Length: 480
Ligand code: FRU
Image (cartoon, rainbow, N blue to C red; front, side):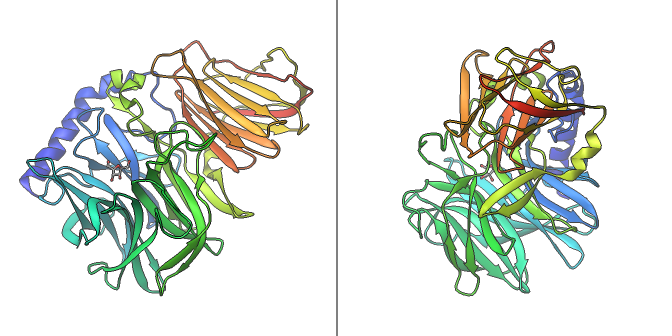
C-alpha cells in the first residue's frame, strides 16, 4: 500500500469518527437502507456474491456532501438486509485514478474477486483522462490494484467509463459507457481470454445505432445480462428530453431487451423503458447470486438535481441505495420485486380485509409510522384510490386515465408539489416500503416501481386512504 493510499484511508476514517455524532443524530438517517457513514454516496459498484457473502461497493466522497475524488466504500451482507461496513476497498491514490476511482464491477475468477473500475484523471487544465483499471482480492476485503488494463480507444471522448464485466461461454466480456466523438451516447463491448487483454468489439448499442435516433450525449453505467433467455441491457443515458409522462427526471435509468450475437457483436433490441418512475433513481447495477437470482440495486439519488438541498446535508451525509430487487421478465417487461429476505424486517402485523374506502380520509390503527411495509390488494379494479403518506406524498390511482401518480412535497422549498406517473391497465396491488425519509412503491407485483425521498416532520406519521368511487381493498401492514 502506497503512502498516499494509507494517508487517504486514515483521513477518511478520521472523518467518519469526527462526524459520527452529527450523522447519527439525524432523524432522517434511514433504518434499513445502505447509506454512507459520512459524506456523499452515489453509484452501487462491484455487486457480487463471493463465497456466500454479498459484497456491495459504492462511490463515496467521505470528505464532503458533494461529488469529488471518489473512493470505493464497501459493505458486506449474508442476507442482503443487514449490512456491515468494511474497510475502504479503493482510494484515489494512483496516477491513473487520482481524481476518482469511478464506477465499475466485480467478477469472480479462480477463487478471487477481480474489480474493474474507471480511473478518473484531470490534468492541470481540467482536461479529463480515463483509464480502466483492474484490482484483485483473495479474501474479498483487501484489494490490490493491478494497474491499467484498457486505454481510451479511437473514436471516443474521455467520457468513457463504468466497466461491467461478465463471463459467457468461457470468455470474458466488458461493456462500458461512452460518448463517441460526435458527442452521442454509446455502450461499447470488449472481449478477453484472461481479463488482462481486451479486444474492442465496437459499440453494440447507442444513439444512431439500430432503432435509436438521437438518444443522449452520454450513456453511463451499462450492465448487460441474460434473463429468461434474453439479453437485457440496462444503462443510464444523459440528454434525453422529457416526453409526456416519460423521462421526467434530469437523467434516466432504463433498459432494452434483445438478443446479443456474441460472435458478431451485434445486439438487436427493442424500445427503451425506464426502470423506475420515481424522483430518485440512477446508475443501477445487477448481479446474479448463488441461487441464480438476478438482483438489482440502484442509487437512491439523482445527480445534479439539487443534491445540495437534501436536509441530510446538515448532518454531513447524503443519498442511499435502493432496496435490492429481484428481476424477472414477464410478457416482455422487466418486473422488479423486493427480495424475499426483506421479510426478515417484519415485526408486528395488522390486517384489514375488505375495507370500503370513502371520500373522506380514513386511517387504520397501526398503519402508520416511520418504518413500515404496507401491502394493499385492490378488489374493485375500476375505482379511484388515493393514499396519503405522512403529509408528504400521495399515491393516486385514476382508472379512467389508466394512470398511477405519485406526488411529493419538494425537499428544495418544502412546499412545491412534484409529480411522477406511470401507465397501468389496472391496479391489482401495491407494496410500499417506508423508511424514515424514503418511500419505495412496487406496483402490480413489480410491474412498475417508484423510488422517492421524503422529509416529513417527526410528528407526521399518519397514512390515510380515500376513494372518490367505491374502492374496496385488503390492507396488511408490518412494522419494520
Ligand atoms: C454515475 C457516474 C458514473 C461515474 C460515477 C462517478 O452517477 O457519473 O458515470 O463513474 O458516477 O462518481
